[in-house]
Image (cartoon, rainbow, N blue to C red; front, side):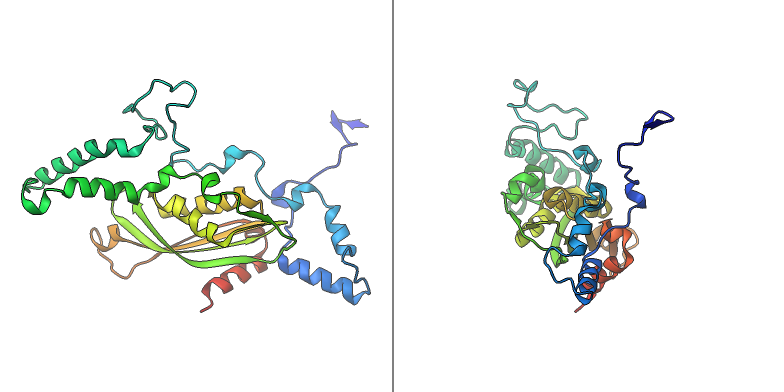
Length: 290
């Protein structure tokens, strides 16, 4: 039957913003209630009830992969094998994601740039102490930004496992080093990641490697936090992801206001962690527990 052009035979799924997410705590409470009521079957009433809920409730994740992209950071680099770029070398254009097949090919030009910088500072690039500095600085910059050469698929390396668990997984105090894109000076700190699995878990070391991918680029902390959360979402499609980053920015410590003890804290909460205050509180308590 159709009313005002709408087919009422199809099930109506409310918008994701109106759907109350299911947290690990609520799952445990519901299972406990079932046991108290005499239902101890592993396929108890709660599990059956959960299986009948709309897909939009069981999976908060974004279906459109393009929505996982965060503006301002290059995508997977184009190479000479990319269609339409077979004869390309390196174009000095405005495309952020257009780079040569190997970044090491830029070392001579980068070293020349550092040599020019030293001259501009009033130094003599030919004196003994600075003779090899331009090459060293160029190699160091490539290392500081090696995340541009890494993709999520490559780093995960299929370390995603099927596991029947819905309890919160938290890895905290992951060391992070990055480069401020505004001043090209370092910022560093710690990252804590939590997620609620939905049948798939990620190798624990891979969470630290995800931090490495996105921190080893020219960054701002706010974007870095969101990228880490979206990468975990893309990897295992959990019920929710939470990321907290605490950083010290040398652009504030060494220059400008020169506030030595200042720290910047950013967070991204997705799915259950955004919608369920109790789940968010549980994560934050675990992160701050010493």
